[in-house]
Image (tube, rainbow, N blue to C red; front, side):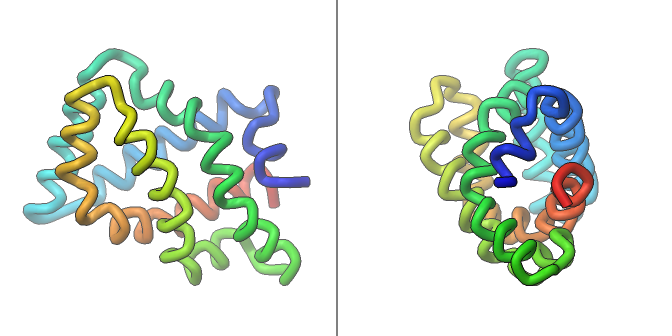
Length: 145
């Protein structure tokens, strides 16, 4: 079974989206320092665009993210590795796969607030996504391991 099949299963997708939003909230909450303040402000601005904006974005991006991460998922499964551990050990590859999608989406964003927030945070995005890779791997394990 592919990661796309796992993460877009209609019976599980609402909970997967909810868990992804929780993961994002936890990652943002854990950020500290000056860069953490910028991330929290940017995330707050994006969440303030309209109620449910983040949830809608996650639901929209989930199939593309699943497709982008499927080769890593398959590699982990083929080598009998725990997804969380594999994603942690390959955090750079996870980040590159996800950011390739969000970069494209940001360029086409209709919301100036969302695009502006993304542009301001993009410089540190790879590091932040790499830090989220273990949690993301664990979330995928929950549904597809």
